[in-house]
Length: 333
Image (tube, rainbow, N blue to C red; front, side, top):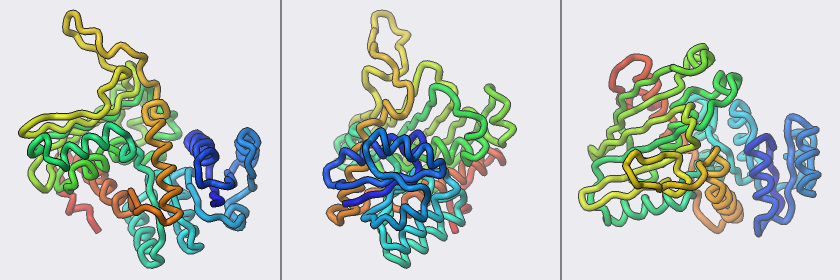
């Protein structure tokens, strides 16, 4: 199969490297708004590059991976769908709920195959939590705790266009909670704070946030996020049930140290960022996309899934701004 990848910046270059070595990918074609960057990545991998999206769509592709800036996602997904190409696209689908819905309607009308990139669904620990919850081995779930903590904040320019901490960071936790439990989030209460750089408040964002979620079976979830976790990159999900508990992200590289005397675990070097923490998950995600593009597996993460997570994120942002509980039904279209 000949695959194309649009966008070979930080995550796109990583995806290009992964796709190039996957079984089932006979040829890879890369493109980027910066033609020089596309050429550099292509030459490093020994693959073909083209100067722009038009050339990429004219390259006889069997599928397309999208890792461009957020504002271009919707148009590229729609164009690929109209061309009949299976698509993998990094989250988010679009810059707003309305635009996401427009993409969803177009995808459904064309019966297009579009996989959205929520890599935690492919992490071994998260998958094990899902199995434990689904099998009933921990009883009925009453509490979940999701954590996303960046070791250091991204640049100010990124924050200005990120959509805010709930849509950029916690949206992964919202998707994971839905995926692990099979339940919908019906109500949120969220708060945020700024003690770091001024560019967060200048963008109308916060550098630290917390949200309490109520699921449709009355289970509760607490989701926290921060841009300032100097100990390292920390991403976890805990599920506590009536008969037991289980957690993803508790390994020897967890950037958390016990204050108890004589406790040395974890003792490994902390994860510096998401590439290291989710390296294997990203590879499994793209390997699944190749199988999905070939028609051998079902879609592991749909546009509808992405929309549901964004609904929760939008409800959290409203709750943070207005200091009140928000039902997700308020933001649904």
